[in-house]
Structure formats: structure tokens, C-alpha cells
Length: 311
Image (cartoon, rainbow, N blue to C red):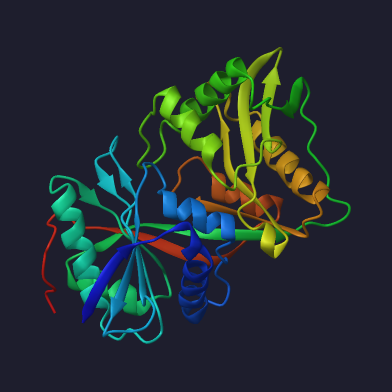
């Protein structure tokens, strides 16, 4: 039984990271670990500001569940995450609380919760409320060999974006929006809120954003962040090529440049995520370069918003 709920504070970050990591590793030893800064970003919300809720269950001395709704006002959607300690036996109660909280805030919004594909207890809990599989994603990794080489494409120049320069910020925003316009679930975002959110992330690396250009025209970008520095692993958080410039090898050149950048920072491996149903061929490209799927997670959805479990 949920006995109390409070909003997390900055001092809770270590305990929240510990609970999330224990939850994930219990179901999937290959799951990526949440870093201190990654947890801080999680607590701030993926799109809009969002409180993280800590739930005490059965009068436990410390919180036993972590919930973040991750609201996105532009898409009118919640991207809910639920993590529980090993002592929690009734996950349905936590999920029910999460759904009720979301309905109370925005009853007309959709809800897309996430879960590790091996987390049968959590998935079953969401299914009990009528949620079904929407999309599957891979977490992919590769070791960085000492002789790893970049790809040279004639006429292509890859250099860092100056992420503090207003004009280059707008160019970065433009190519980002153009690159992802046909991706599942994507919706274009205005520049001001987009750049404010990106630059404010705790895992943001101001030196890790790269621009690919031909004759001075930006054709693609690659962004590396500090998501997994505590595991000595680089992270390529975004990679995109403009719609009119696909098919010239720019994506592979950018990917290899990002990997080389991660190696230059002393990381011995690099990670990225991919939508397995992405029609752009991203999965094939990553496998070609040397990435292998190490873990997998899913997004679920339910248009009906059931308030009580069906099972």
C-alpha cells in the first residue's frame, strides 16, 4: 500500500540512481547504468520540466518507487517511467497511481510508458491496465579499437559546432529538425525552447556536437554527450543527415567521427540507441560499423486510459 508520496530533491539523486540501477540490473545485467548527471536530467523531464515522485510503500523507512511522467506539452503526451525496489510486490498499485496522476494533470493526453524488454513484471503491470507494445528499441554498443578509422567522403568537412554561437545554434537546430522530420513520433520544436533544453542538460558536452558540411552548407550533425562517463563509455545521443542529402555516406562519416571523438576522451566503448523499425537504415549502418545490440526496451501505449487493472 502506498503510504506517502513526495517530490524528489537534488539531495535524492544518489538514492534515486541506486534504486533505478538496481531495478534495471535485476532484470537485465546488460542494461546501461544511470549516472549522477543522467539521473539529474531524468528528474528534470525529457521534454518539459517534470517533478520526480518518490513513493513510500507499506511504511518503509525510505522510498520504494520512483515515478516520472515526463510530460511533453507539444505532443500532448506522457513518457512515463516507473522503477521499484526489490521489496515491492504489487507493481500494479504503483502503475495505477502513475496513471491516476497523469489523468489528473492532463486527461486528454496520450501515455507512452517505457520498460526494459526483459522486465516481465513491469510489462505485465502495464498490460493489466490495457497497454500494448508500440515500439521496440535497441541499446547498441561497440568497443573502440585503437586502429579505428574515420571515413573520408570527398568534399565533406566535419568540424565542431560552436554551441555558444547564436547563428550556429540555429543552424544546428535547423539540421536537427530536418533530419528527424520523418522519424516515428517526431514533432518539430521551436528554436528557443529546444536550445534552452539542450544546453541545460547536465550530460551536455559543449565540445561534442559536430557539423558536416559540403561547400559551406550544413548537411548533417552528430552529438555526443556525457551520459555514461561513469562507465568510461561514450554516448552518441543523436545523428542525422538532412533529407535532401541522404545516400552519400555522410551518416557513416559522422558516426565514425563521433566514435573517434569518444576514443579521444579515453572511452573504451561507445553506445547509442536505435528504433528497430526506423526506415532510414540506421540499424544496418550501426551494425556495419561494428555496433551490436546489448539490451532492448519498449514503449507501450493505451488510448483507452484504463484506471483499474483488467486482470
